[in-house]
Length: 61
Image 1 (tube, one colour):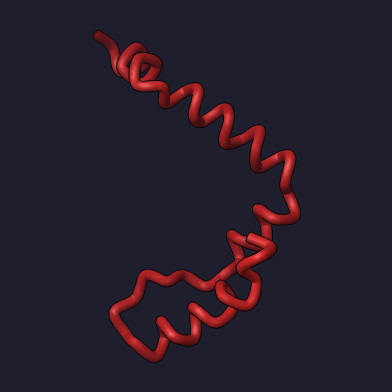
Image 2 (cartoon, rainbow, N blue to C red):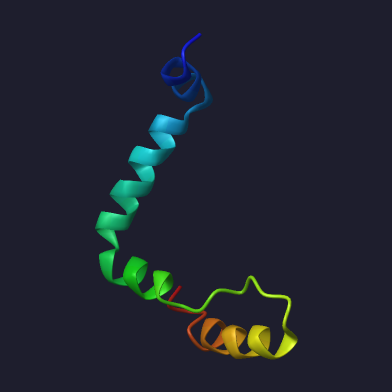
């Protein structure tokens, strides 16, 4: 089984295509979400600073 066949069997190609369609449909929202600060940090202060914009825009995302 080739890597391409494996991805097809796992649904990776379909998921990738659907994700791209979803991103194109909601381009403004996708751009906004991608610009939010990351929550991946071990520093509590940085985490709290990053959480604030996420919570403030919860309805939008």
